[in-house]
Image (cartoon, rainbow, N blue to C red):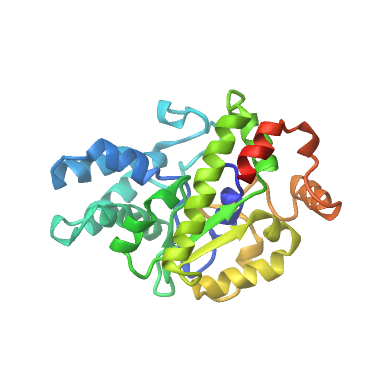
Length: 274
């Protein structure tokens, strides 16, 4: 979390060869846990509650499910239209496994918004901790590509504490190490052509070179949309490669590293370096 995946998602968002889901589905850690043991019909109904619900979010009257994201507004994407498209795509006889339900949700969004065209080569979803489920991902989709963003743990920790001030360095370091070690294990098992460990700092230092590598990894064309961050096709106001916050991050890197290092406890350095 807070490793730069939102920035990467925003850069991919409007690429004409991709269908990019605008929010984290938390499919493996939430949807699958809540639907374990249910019938297929029940799972499809649950998908409308746990995967498509984001298209009911709006700024004027934030819903309970929108807690933590009051700025999100998908009122321009009719929920009923996405729901209908999902039901047309996720026909019971076409569902081979749970992963097809996630794919149907993403493609339903793509159909309604016009992202799903003949040119589309991949659909994209990003959620924290997906690296823990790489074996299942590649079992369902042998041609899948995984991009695992890794950020300097000290910068990462400071960024995350803005949202979760109760996360102590020891707790964060444990999670960072576990995630990163899992990423290295996945790369070793599946190879560089299927599992890419992308350093967030590389994207900041050398955006053109890194985005070119990204295009080669995904086998997509270079496109101007990669330099125009968006969410669901709308300009994204978050961190982008030309923003003040990113410029500040770049200056820290040019100066030789993180400005946060003096603030970090020895335990964070010790635990992440193991």
